[in-house]
Image (cartoon, rainbow, N blue to C red; front, side):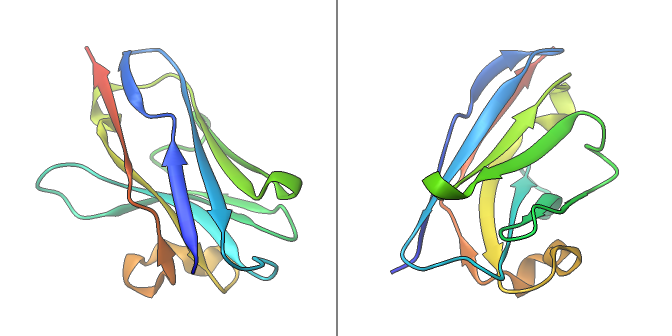
Amino acid sequence: QVRLDESGGGLVQAGGSLRLSCAASGRTFSGYAMGWFRQAPGKEREFIAAIGWSSGSTYYSDSVKGRFTISRRNALNTVYLQMNSLKPEDTALYYCAAKRAAIQAMGVPSSVDYWGQGTQVTVSS
């Protein structure tokens, strides 16, 4: 059974930083893109970033490029999202995701193969 377990969310002031972790288990993820999405109340789920499990190549949405960094440690089966210069509009439930595809194909929520349960990030002004 595939599991994606997120952690690291919390409350932070604007301008601060958080690092989210996603522990993946239940299968080998070679050939997969791993990514992060977020969903704010009343809004659609939004793609943020993706990384190739094998290649390490990365892909970001324009809304977070330059502020967020996605990385992975294959030996720990863990993907990270380092979030800097946080803004109140970054407040959302953040989800880890996995898709057997190239990273550029990660951007559509309906095509994701596996989801985590989400971790809340709240940025106060």
